[in-house]
Length: 173
Image (cartoon, rainbow, N blue to C red; front, side, top):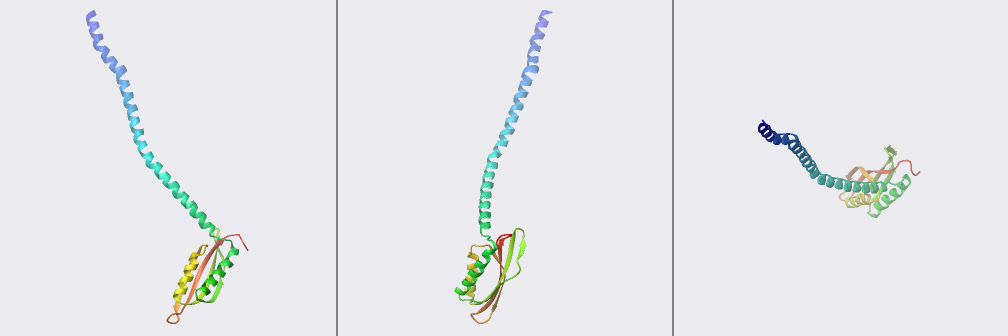
């Protein structure tokens, strides 16, 4: 009977050690290894996410700089007269005959005022082209809304352009 008890103890001891110690420990090691694998896989994306973040940050910086630059080109209303004089002087300098320069009613759009300027000139096409380039190079945000050109003679054209000047709302006179 003792031998049977010792033999059964010898056979049940390894099984009980496996069932109560090794198996739970092995399962815990498997779970930790699996968690490490999952977290390592997630870490692979951090470099890409960080690269995208740095790229987005540099784009945002460029956009902020561009926005500040654009807003600096929007003067107060009182500067509109300087633009009108500069455009008229440039037209005369390029050999254009300024027939009229008139402003229409100013309208408010969001935080800005838009002043349409009706500019009628006569002269050569090259001179008109130089005037348009001069208007585009002026340190001010403006938009040529309409441009009508009619041929009068072989080298003479009549042109009417409506340029919209942007200014800050609530500033100036």
